[in-house]
Image (cartoon, rainbow, N blue to C red; front, top):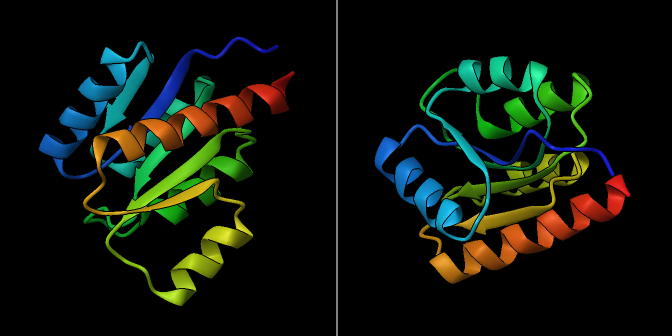
Amino acid sequence: MTKKDIDILILDDDVDLLTSVAELLADFGYKVKGFADPESAVEFAVDQTFAVGLFDFRLGSVKNGLDVVETLQVMGAKSNFVMVTADVERSTQLRAANLKVFGFMRKPVQPQELLDTVTRAMASAEKAAA
């Protein structure tokens, strides 16, 4: 099994939400790295591996969460990605499906739902890496 540098890469332009999600996951023993802007997340991901990407869809920048997923996949990331969004447009869901996004969570996300989804995404990533 390949050694992951971190378990979960979090991308959310809402710093308060980013911090609370990162703390929640860290409290459950995950190695987490969070970013508030897509450029920094992509830059970090160039040299790192991670099992799960937990990305907000709307990032308050030119790129959205699915753009970042696509960029990382082109770069060779084999991670499972989970989108967190209030946006449930059909086109967004179709694009997520085409990018083989692992999960789609609607805001506001309940902590237990988040943990369950991340746990499933981690298990799936580990199985794929084995």
